Image (cartoon, rainbow, N blue to C red):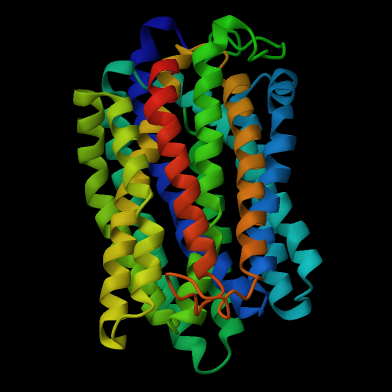
Length: 420
């Protein structure tokens, strides 16, 4: 137990350690998790299978993570809880490595992915609670903006290295490339655990986390209920297309792993340099303005993905880089604004339980959106006369995403801005 007079110094030190820990996590994400989609494509899963394996684990995670609050009150420690889930993730990375040479069965990999994302999603609520305590509200936008920028540097570097490794082995045994990058992810997860143990953790009783269920129907939670509703329908509109974008690049646009690396690297660079400015914008203009703007721009991104299919082959790669960069810019600002808005609404109380509610409904929405997108990708509408030709099985998915995102923005404009 640290004396109260030392808490500010421990907080400040822990914020620096948190950035280092986040950098190790970002290496795991950049070298491993961000290439799981490419791995599933390498295994020749269908578009529907990829939609399912990209979203069903999130559903499983969102349901089971609702028990995180109970487990927290058993362990009475956010640190122990996070380390427990990170150890599970490490075990699953070993399972992914095992699968490269011993099994390519869809059901087995679906189980591995589900356990991985159960652990990942279960960490989000206690992490939010912990960081909500450590970061003073007056610097929250700047801190998370700066932290995100540093974390994204390591995510970018690890993603580039992983992409180059895959490209190097693509002419021979690509499975060896996945062995190397998944091993990097496993080691990086160990580094993340090590620095997590160094962070200051407030006493169990210091942050108000009631060991009771949160009833969102209670009028005291009206704004939070409205926020979670918007967050859920927004994630639904995004997940219709999002799990299939990498598949679109690799199969329809005929990208190789080097092209994939270029697109992800440059788009991450754009997102990287924007995070600091997003933090300043949030502190100056507030979260709602950013949420409104980003939600509006999201409507047009699927149509841009549709158009580049018909471009001159020379222009497809640079156009993809541009659209991916704009996407990364907007999604980065939106995520930062949404997280900060929830911090504002929670007022530092019941963060674990409320965050768990958010991730529960978000997971359901992600899965349903993925199912819709996956199903639409199985329909061959190329023979039907339409205003816009649909030569790719993923083009109907893009138009569905445009329609739903438009409805989400209309809801935000007329209803959401008044309720949360």
